[in-house]
Length: 295
Image 1 (tube, rainbow, N blue to C red):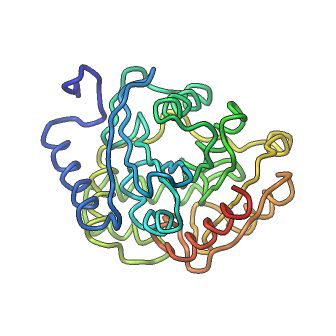
Image 2 (image 1 turned 90 degrees about the vertical axis):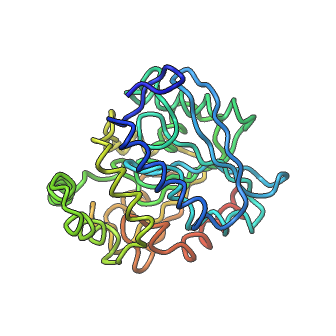
């Protein structure tokens, strides 16, 4: 639909948008654990929404959400990061659900990286570390390949693509469950990707409404060649849950170790694909240690 600023969004109707924004606002008011401010700023690709938390003089870190969700998903670890002294910038990706709107849709590796570059410029961020979950994990390593001088380090949480193809069964099960529109079946699908966990009702409602709106990424993350991975020399951290269903966790960790020149890898016990929501304390502890050691 066309928004008030003349740009477009993924929402099909005002009713659909209101329902999603109510769920978004509920996460921010009830689950976001630390004070925050928000801003909307122009980029070449449209207006981008950012949530900012943490001390004013804290070291900046960028948070990139997964596909079919928005920056509210970072409620589970932002408190740990802010308490450790980090200033967190969580951007709603243009082309996904959330509060950003579309002027020109990023549809390839270059335009996705250029949108993120515009975000850094708007926030005055020179060379921050970036944390990304799933599609966000692809976003930060893709940015490092295209704009290597503008990212300090890469933190990937269960990244989509990059190291391995996605399992067909996972793709089919999610598509059938979401397409059914039947809430118990969608709840079961959420538990399937979350390592068997029953989701918080508030976050599940956000996910359900997001999945009803989002039809998949405009650009699917590729599986990089060994040579492409060897070319990424930034300090990197890869965390994968041992219950992740989108691919074989151990094979992904081993491939990263075998190809990336400067990577630390770790298997997170009891973590599913929604890793930062599944195991927020252990994930946060590992990220904070990496940031302290490697920046």
